[in-house]
Amino acid sequence: MWFKDLFGIKKRAGLPFFLYSTLTKSKEEFTQPRYVRSVRMYNCGPTVYDTSHIGNLRSYVFADLVRRTLEYNGFSVKQVINITDFGHLSSDADSGQDKMSAALKREGLELTLENMRMLADRYIEEFYRDLKQLNIGTERILFPRASDHIAGEIAMIRTLEEKSYTYTGADGVYFDTSRFSEYGKLGDINISGLQEGARVAAAEDKRRPTDFLLWKKDERIGWDSPWGKGFPGWHIECSAMVNATLGKQIDIHTGGIDLMPTHHNNEIAQSESATGKRPFSRFWLHHEFLNIQDEKISKSVGNMINLPTLVEKGYHPISLRYLFLGAHYRSPLNFTWEALDAAQTSYLKLRRLVDAEKNEGRPPSEWQRKIHERFNDDLDTAGALGAMWEMIKGKKLSGATIKAGILDADQVFGLGLGKPDELADSLCQKTFGVPVELSELPERVQTLVEAREAARKEKKWEQADSLRKDLQKMNYAIEDTSEGPRLFRKE
View 1 (spheres, rainbow, N blue to C red):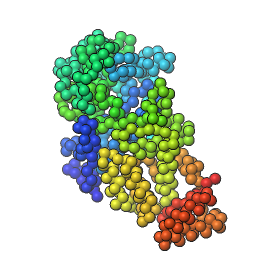
View 2: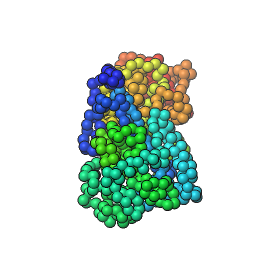
View 3: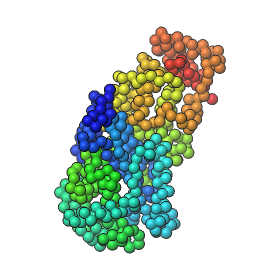
View 4: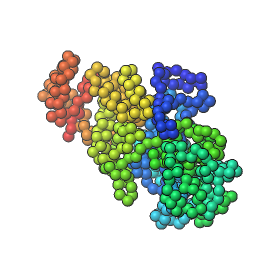
C-alpha cells in the first residue's frame, strides 16, 4: 500500500524504517525532514592510487543497499561518492607520503599534477567498471573529485581560520581540536587515553595528538594558497565536497568502521565548526571489515583479491554481491572460496527460477511484508534472503507468484534478476545443465516426470520430492513453472 506525503512523494505505508546510528549507538527510525525533498547521502569513496580489492567493494555494495532500501520505502535519494585523488597521506597521523605521489613513484612517472590526474583517471575507470559489474548504477550517483574542489577546500579552511579553529605549524595548517568540545563524540573516542608519542612523533609542531592537518605545505607539488604551496588534507576534502554537492547538513553518511575514529570525527569537527550547523549528519552508518580466510586484507600478507580475479576464476561478479548480502553489514565477514561457491550456486538458482517462469503474477503479500520487515530492520539482508528462500520452498504458491516475489525483493538485493546476462546464462548451463524439451526426453524420464506431476496435483509432496531425486540421479534437474515442469540435463 502506498500514500503520498505533503510534498507528493510516493511512500510505502505501514512499515517504519530503522537504521543503527553509530553516533547514538542505537537503532532509530529514519524519517525525512519535511523541508527536504530527497535524502542526502554521502558515501566515503576510494583513494584512486591502485585497483580496489574486494574488501573495498563491500563499502559500495553496502551504500547501494542503503539507497535501494530507501527507494523501496518510497524515498528519493541524492547520493554522492567522493573520489580522493590527492592529499590522502599514508597515515591518519598526518605522516607519510601522499598515496597518489607514492603511486606515481611506483609507476615510474614524474611527480606532476598532470601525471597524477592521468593515473587517477585510470583507476577511476577501473572503479566504475567494478561498480557496474556489481549492479551499482553509476549514472544515478555524483562522483566529485577532490582535485576539482581546491577552491572550496581553501575557502573552508579560511572560514575555520577566521573563526579561530586553526593554527599554523612548520608542516602546514592544523585544526585545533581543543576548540571543538565534542571532538571524538562519534564512537566515544577516549581522547585523554591517546598515547602522545604514537601520533605526534611525525609532526612535532602538533599541539595535541588529535589535531589534524587542513593544509599540507609542499613546495614540490600542489596548489598556491594563503599558507603557501601545497595541498588540502583528505579530511577537509570530504567536508568541502559534501558542502558543494549536498549542502551544510546531510541525512546519512556511510563508510567503513576504520574511518570512524579519526576521519569521520574530523569531518564532524571541521564541518560543524565551519558552518555552525549541527548535526553535520543525522545518521552515521559503518560497515565492518571483510577478512580473507580469517586474515585482514593486507598487501604484506599478499591476500588482496580484486573483482577481475574472481571473474578469471569463473565466478560471476554478482556472486560476490550475494556473499555480502548473506551477512549483516555490522558483522565482520570472512571470505573463503567455499563461501563464494555457495553464494554463486544460490545466485544462479534464483536466476534459473526467474528465467524458467515465463509468466509473472503479483508478489505474495504475506511474504512481501516479511521480507520488507527484514529490510527495514537495519538492513537485515541475511534475514530477508532467508525469508525469500522460505517463500520459494513453500508448496502453496505458483511459479508466477514466486517469480513476482523474487523480483520485488530484488529491488533491494540488486542481483539484476530477470535482466539479460550472457555470463549468468553460461554459468547456469554449466552448473545446472541445458534446458531440454519434454518431447525430447527418453521414455523412462518422461514417465518419472508425469508421475511427479500427478503426485504434485494430489499434494503428495514426499512422493514428488522422491521422484525429483530419482531424476537428479539420472542427471536431470527439474523446475516447476506455471506452464508445467521444465527440465535441464547436465552434460
